[in-house]
Length: 418
Image 1 (cartoon, one colour):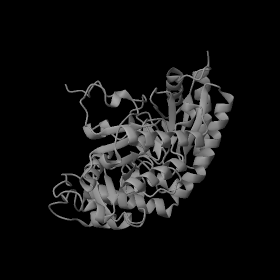
Image 2: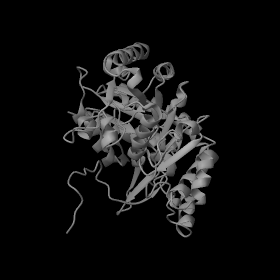
Image 3: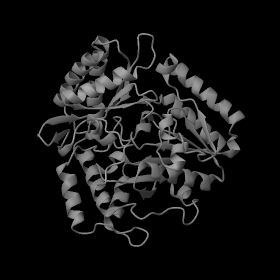
């Protein structure tokens, strides 16, 4: 009898039978507040009626129209709809299935368009598990160990992790930009550097927002040296941070934007966006794929965009994220095992540390598991696994935020108990 790979480790003990909004239900109909959202995927909640209706209608009409063979209307309509929310000038789109694939496509485009090889990424980044994307990933050795040699031409610069360095945001930003300049002078000449690839908020790296001054500093250096600024919005896009795109917290226009996760409310779909003049500098045959731009996924993405607009979910993420952040800080004030609380919008985290300030993965894991026992599903992240993150669907309500905070407070108390 076949079994799942033993390398797949389940973060919670739940066997989900069905989902509805912010909740998952097991076989005994026990209800769980799902503050994982499929790792930020179910942006409109589980089985939003409008997304379900759009997908069901499309399944009965056309499931798969391979988009380099034939064209289909859901893809054309989605392209037009995304044009209304993408940053100005990013008017050309290429669709794929996953975030990792989109990162790979962005690397390929950057190298083709610039004629340069090197890619600069930032410490703590997560860009995927495929070979090129793994070479860009420094959120933890588990994503890249034992598979080398990885793709060459990758240089790693510091990310302004204020809490880790023990500095304020301004000092951390100055340090990171100064070290980037040093890297460009010593390891990756600007004439060899195709792109900076950056997350507006480190995801697997610990939910650390990039200070606006850092992103703006990257934009200035990209312009000065003819380097492309590639912004990985796989986890931060589609309203997650309280802006439609995470980079909108800063005045830093991307040259290439990568999107996935919340794009289609659970259906596999990703995309890269760039100006047409940049996209056409890719080499012929460099873009394609069997399943990219699947008709059902595109229909679900269209419905997702409509729900986000009609239910004003971006503003809700900003407002409710502030409520969640305030509540998490109150829990932290009562429990010294939490050293830092941070995030943007509905992308929040609590970092567990020892009295001496060292990472405390054991207590973080106990808190995450205790939360599941109380009916709240969460995930850990960070290089040391000592950060617990909250990523509720954007349709979450104030009462559900408050319920989650009460359950979290109980879970932290359980984890911190001697």
